Image (cartoon, rainbow, N blue to C red; front, side, top):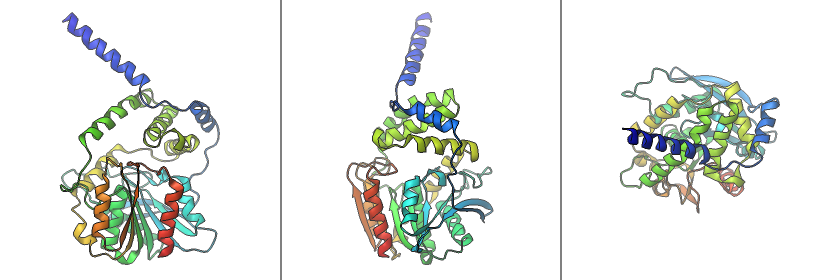
Length: 339
């Protein structure tokens, strides 16, 4: 028993040391930048018109940002699973506004300042169709008849549901890192090796959660971003401001919302046949190295949507913002302008 106990203690000690020292190394200037953000007034990260509208009994929070120049049209942004309006990078949003587009971003149900569904039933969950109706309710609240619909990952699935059920409300579709049927048995899904490596990478990040506090939660987000984009692609100050703003001025992260969103994806049937009937100009963007949602999903969308074209990014995985964001924005804006 003594030997067994010693082995267990040794394993535990080794695991603890590994958690403390493993994970991506943060840039040398991280502490200084975080301290600067912690010690200065937070900037206001929502500068547009904000409001709340009701959809299926739930309050859905939104922001609308109008351009200073002539209005070309409206863009509705649909974010990925468990994320909120705050998670859209500032430069990404500003690119649309500077190009003459009104931008609408909203907190999906279960995130941000929208209602969190507390009486959710796993046996009777809401679907992506319901979540698409939330997005349409936002357009109704702003009296926008038609918009360019942009969707990322799960948000791309919601964008498809909008185009299917409300084709008259959609000017163009931009579908990023998404699918027409997440659990399609004929298309490769997330590999077991990718799942395991993701789990292993996530374990060292627990140290930030265990220690807790605003500074460590900021470091956790920085570490996650480095894992996806690398050191050269991150803006430490922006990440720190976003995390701190979410902690101090919003409701923070909702794990239950992630689980509910995942279930919504699972229970929503294939859109392939219905997508064949839409004639919306569609741009599908996907990375060739996406192991979470393999590129075959993007190629299948181009195959089934009659007026779709694909843009495949070599070496890119399931990550956002994209590594070559400038070039990608040119393609997206060109797609919108051509309409």
